[in-house]
Amino acid sequence: LTTVDTVVKDFNKWFGNVNDVHNKSRYLEITVVNMSTRKRVALEDSWFDSGRFWSQPYGTFEPRSSMTFYVCNVDGGFMTGVSGGVGFRVYEGDSWVPLQDGDLMWWICTFSSPYAGSSKCLTRWKDYGIKPLWEEMNQAHAVYDKYCACFQKSETNMVFIWKDPETNW
Image (cartoon, rainbow, N blue to C red; front, side, top):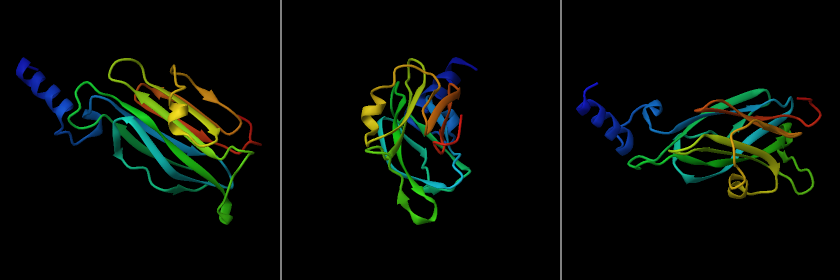
């Protein structure tokens, strides 16, 4: 590429005119997996410190299914990344009764892909709060507990998994 072509390409990445998420300066492909054999998972909240959805995740997904969505830096942002989280509620089969374990009743998934630095993710089954969990992210690593897990397949691809607590990892 010539210097002019490089400048135009970088300008379009930073200031919009992008029609493919892979052309954004920072993006993440996020896959959410429901490994449960009998519980439904429903998206009920989202929060961004920076960035936005490229493709909006849809409402509810059934047992043994998954959904993929994309997040990216904002259009027109200069040297910005994407960082935030989503909050899910888990429901018992056809009854639509929310799963609760003491005060814990939210599956929170947080992610970050800063303009400078490494991508990271964190997930927990907890009381409500996307931002408090997001503030706990400090490194890129795989994490899991009796209900959920997250790991990075690559710098731009993260996977979050929900499972029944009686199912072993």
